[in-house]
Image (cartoon, rainbow, N blue to C red; front, side, top):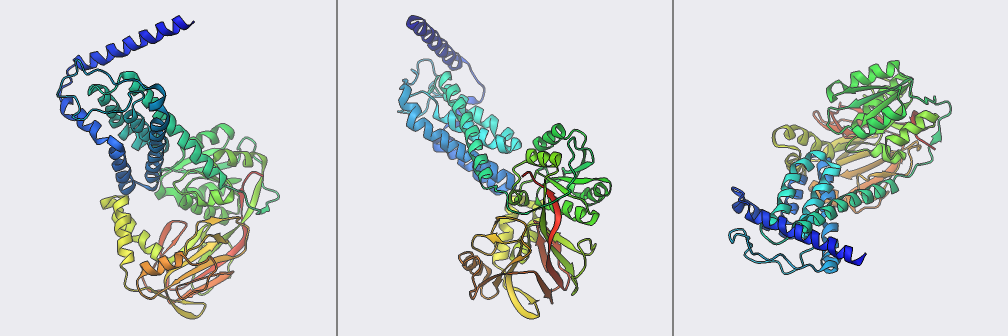
Length: 498
């Protein structure tokens, strides 16, 4: 058995060296100038760090998440190589006989050869990126492969070193994705919302109409595949953002249960349609931001399918904003708008307004930076009349239920069954940047010169300056002269497994 192992290892080593020599003898037009420089650019992960930064600045929210996953995968692969890989095998570097001098690196590596750290880092970054954003992964993958090949081309690694490093890098990408998903699922804890009795059970999906928003480019194709497999008789309607309100209204009018696949803005539009039609809502998380689904305790399409099939649902409260001084109308008032997560006036809606205006011209990342700079240089807070009292605020935040955590715009709720609004105000005075920063360090229910937080059932907002924007669940609109915010307890039936 031992002799057979030695024979196998010897044959593998000879084949490895033969392949190395074949690469050395082969003339690759233009590669002598490009590949050595590309390999040097990847030293210490500089190339991938720069790529991650560029994607974070110029890409979407999902691209930024993908860049973070890629960087984490690279860090894991690099740590594994340097602490275990290099010192486990201790393979000498290849002899440079036959490698043209023009290809050879000016400074030869002093570490052992197996596995290739450059290859591991390159494929770890590409895999981590691709598993979250396949489009960006397709852009980076050829560069990663070129960096890996450059290590053989310049004579510092055998082909097997590169293959082992690449395999380790891909494995790091999958491990980081598994860890990240575990962390995300760990923070998804169902609340104690009231059980909705009488929610229809649709074992095969008959009577369920699901509208999928394809316009934002974030629809979860895997989630739709799960839906089709688990609930084969469900009707699936795909539409882009421009047609979304009409498609949702039409779907709600003929559905026993209205389903929606998309992010928070899409879910908000579906909740509005469901409230007006008086039908339950099934949420299939499929957007960049899924705050409502996470706070509800949904981890993905599988959860929703199981709940719809079994007829398991809960009642959740909904925030409402109504133009004018009234606000005593019922939940189906066509003049009203609704928010499942948050409503705000001031700094955040202004930032959103500028970003949406500039993004088509300069891209999402630069637009966000420019919008932040513009908002933080603002000279005047918004003057409002709140419950009859004049106020000047940099930010008015109203949450649908109690949000936990400090600062003016926290992001986590324990459950959605409360019948209160979580109101937070950052008062005007000075510059918005210091005020918002001071509010970020204030307690969740503090009363200070810069920040106030309280719970209430309704709030009348008057004397809103013309052109003032407001935001709700990530959507943007121009505010009327007066608004009433109130809470509709247990207004919406939403499917969730027990």
